[in-house]
Length: 144
Image 1 (cartoon, rainbow, N blue to C red):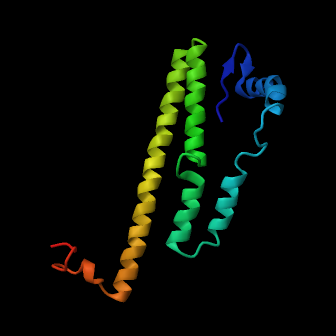
Image 2 (image 1 turned 90 degrees about the vertical axis):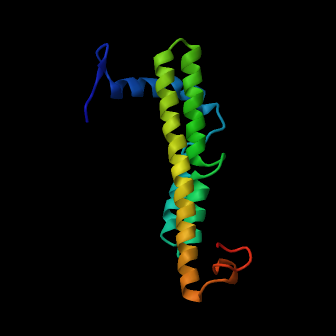
Image 3 (image 1 turned 135 degrees about the horizontal axis):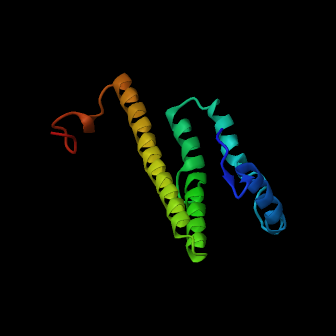
């Protein structure tokens, strides 16, 4: 891994110093020491998922919706960008904003992937049981 130095300090040393400096601040916050624990639990549960619905539900639990990990991380990055902007670091703020935009893209991609998974499972089930009346061409409400 490439190490960049800043005023004679490597990136690892800068991070260690920041962790020491922020330790008291972090201890006073009501945040988990292990924020990734719920995501790891979903990852471990994925091995037990036997249906597309279960795979989708675990992925949605971990990454979908406003309260899930992916969007929470996006919101954290946006807040970091705002703080940088307030402190006069516009270029760093823009980098945080662009990174949060990537998480928006990931969120939309995961949403569509979930829909595609569920649609593929539905198509497979439909193939096994034959078409439903609503899906037969010309049936009322079905495609024409």
